[in-house]
Length: 275
Picture 1 (cartoon, rainbow, N blue to C red):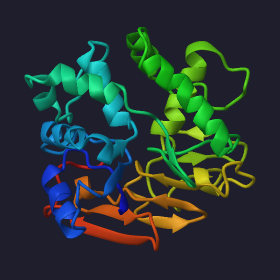
Picture 2: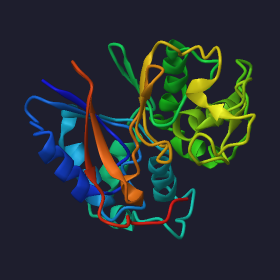
Picture 3: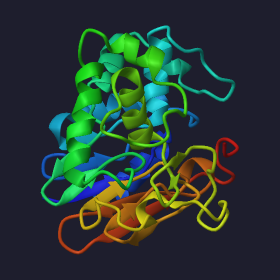
């Protein structure tokens, strides 16, 4: 059995199929881990959701910010944006089945030494803390009041973790870290405006995994979300969103045994402008 982690697909279904051909994916034996953002900006969100759901327990995925946006739109909390490309999901005959399946995906998945998330962790959290905090949001998402979470999840505040955070502020901060964070300052204050690669940010900011004293150091963390970072494998973290959507590549990283990267190129020019 082989385990492959795959970066943000974002509706790039054709590239996903070419990547699975390259790694000779065997659904009877192998397992796929997706870093989230299955949908949006690419051309085939519907086919992507249907396919990954059809794999059953041979595939796991965590939720990304684009997945949560689709859920909020589907439940009437948010409106579609100009560059959204998931109308195929919203008008599909199996829309409710797919949306309900997506809502029940986790923010964090752990198997052995590996942690799978979409974006990042604040430095105040250990990997074990992250598991507990993810469950707080997952419990809300999978419960009866999930629509209220969508109503309160938008916004950049609070931007600094404290255990005393309560209510929607607490759940919003947890959600933002798992699905949006790239940079923090040395104190762990999060920043959601900077989206460029390391070296382009203001001097007081650093990638979340470079903050001195990060409590999750030593845990092997696989994440996506950061296309301008490119492939990254250091500090016990593995960034595998390599910007397929923007004309880059879709990456699979084999996690069992020797870590080996596989990739396929996106169609020339990509699908959308970066945002």
